[in-house]
Amino acid sequence: MIIIDDMSKYIAYIIDNLNHDRSISNLLDSSERIQALLNRYRNTEI
Image 1 (cartoon, helix red, strand yellow):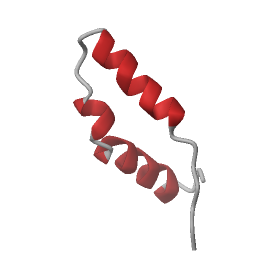
Image 2 (cartoon, helix red, strand yellow; image 1 turned 45 degrees about the vertical axis):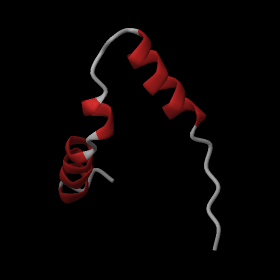
Image 3 (cartoon, rainbow, N blue to C red; image 1 turned 135 degrees about the vertical axis):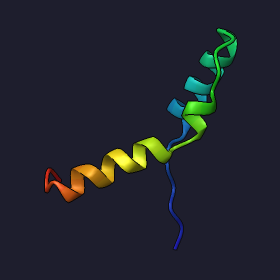
Image 4 (cartoon, rainbow, N blue to C red; image 1 turned 90 degrees about the vertical axis):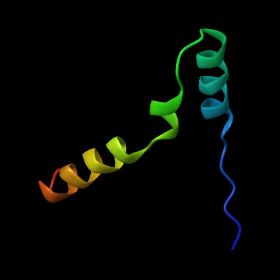
C-alpha cells in the first residue's frame, strides 16, 4: 500500500521559520499535538 500526501505546506512552514530565524523544534516535536488530540478523544469531542 502506498500513501501519497502533499507535504508542501509543511515544508513551506519550515522554510518560513528558518527564514525568520525562529526555532522549529516545536514544529518537529509533535507530542503536544498528540496529547491535545488524545485529550479531545478522551472527552469524546472527536
